[in-house]
Image 1 (cartoon, rainbow, N blue to C red):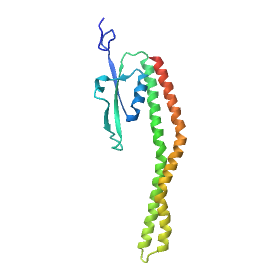
Image 2: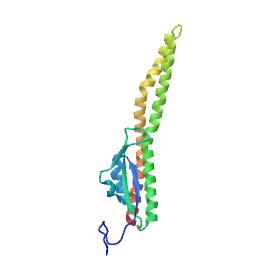
Image 3: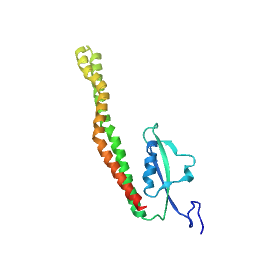
Length: 189
């Protein structure tokens, strides 16, 4: 028998390849998760470590990591493993959306209040620069203007706290679902 470079008897093994782009904090999660569907890290391209680059869309300060996997093309139960893998990826996407939802609504609320405060402050400015100056109107408009500049911070923090309490159980349910999917995939291997 001929041994290939993996030390297993047999001929050539055909591989399929997959790249996953993720946050650096999620690398271990993805490596462990994809292993349950027959994927292993491709050592041929991982010799220099994980490739990191700035995210093209969104903030340039956020770094992403590329993980490269390979899997035997002739793996048994490939169709079922692929179906489970798609469920895994869908759950991961839902978790990502839920994480963003924690700050989305509070951000919009804080911005709306800040813009409203700015509008009141503009009205106050126009009142004081009018001919003749309307000092009483300026003061009346300045009070909600200043409140509109101060309150967004507190509204944001309270909103994030409230959204986190509401969304965390949903995220935990998704993680439980992921673990069940990974367990099924591992049993198929």
